[in-house]
Image 1 (cartoon, rainbow over the protein chains, first blue to last red):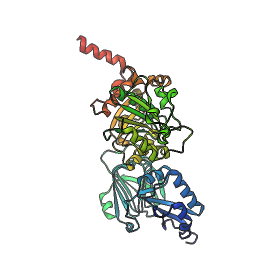
Image 2: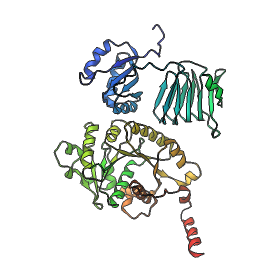
Image 3: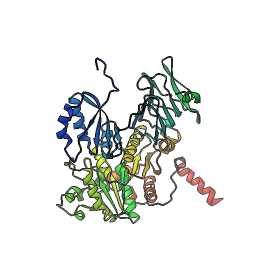
Image 4: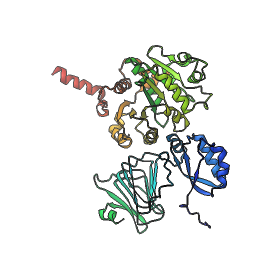
Length: 219
Length: 270
């Protein structure tokens, strides 16, 4: 890995089947086989409380590992994760995300429903949210961020450095906008109703302008 | 009994009026003839018993019921003036660690056998206390005030309730000051419902009588519905039971007595 830590190289760690072994007993062995760095933690059907998760987080951090994301099949653990500020995702039992290839750059993930405060949605391709992104929610994608609704949270397009990406919304009044490495505060005045706007990088600065339909087709 | 409605009263932020809402709603539902129990899940800082004036009558808590050192009937504290209402403290302030979501479900299952309404007073925050309280709930009422911080926290809580499958979730907008709303010094009702996107169960106007009644341990809904807040809570209870009661309009409330007199003159005299 050299001097640079590649933030995109995320490993996965699977907690053991709870019918076979408790995760606390299995953890030392698991850590021996798991590389140091950021990792996705697959918790299966473990129902973890906030204090369980904190313990787990502490054990991992003491050994030089950070939890990037949790994948769980029980809602309770997702709630605990959200409560202590971890990014938890609810998956259907039996289907592991590992089997599915991560969306290639340029692909579009569609999310239906409102993102509420504390939610964080991300994608390796582009993202389309059909619904609102509320204040306090975050949405980030390697490609474009498109919101068919009101964008009032934090949006990050070009998460991995792509400067040609854009953020488009029917009502573009975010708390903060990020495109690649550039950060800007959202505008304060009210937008014109019924006009979609887009944010993109022009000469290293984020500018907001009426959305261009052809620009969307391009990407 | 499957017809029992188990409603979580939560907010995320503290001090917006969860406990006041629980107490008043409990009394209002009981006065309308529904057998109601209020479960104080905020037992670390419990004060639902204070608001109901039942502090000195608590002997047992749900903890003893689950440990089978007492029967449920012994732990339930019946309200002095309103026999349809009972209070059950979930635990003892000194025993914070014992309760798990499973315990909570067990308690609520016991209560559902004998009550029409189970109201759960949720602690502030979204950590274990919230999760315990939310584990047993079927529906939720989110209480918020027209303040940015309260709305933000409510939004977070609504997201968590959605992942737990609690539905329906309804909104009570508490401590509304019609005058400040009309001068746009305060978030408007539309601003709040715009963000939270929930059905509005009720508006409660800021009312000094709430403070008086809280200190006395007699919820406002016990008395005649002559204060705006008492009326609001009674209306909320009615809407919970499916009645079609129009929401109070802050713009009209602002005009107050003088407008009422004028309207009276126009209709009755001329």
